[in-house]
Image (cartoon, rainbow, N blue to C red; front, top):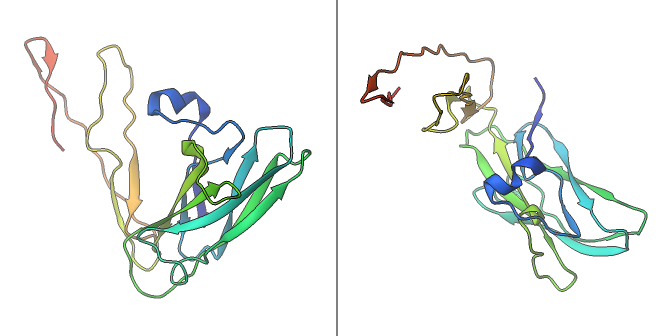
Length: 187
């Protein structure tokens, strides 16, 4: 099992999800999920213009605290006209105590310290605890489907730990129709 799992947000989904992009620079991925014991991993930033570009990268605490769960970053970066990508190494701090999944952010700022516009100038890092097995749950409580859909995709996620293997059984039920409309079934 890989110690770093990456959840990508694709350009095709931007309009549907209401994601705005910065014209000059942005993170290649807006959400990362990493195992607590990964040691470190890389975050990629893409420069979208053919010019020299200077920016500031900073980590921002949320439920994960700098120095306790990750090593803080606060550095000015200069990319030359010929450079189109920058990789930032982020160090994750492992401990032996159980934690819920913890989060922090990395943000891109201009030289004066103002956050750049665009949803892709921030990426969220979720640190998944690996001291407990965790649980399997549905990613979303509601899933919509149209009568013409042949398949409905329901995503399961593992939360609250990653130690060892866990499994679950799923069962589907026939949904009844009332007044020619499908009736929702709670699981």
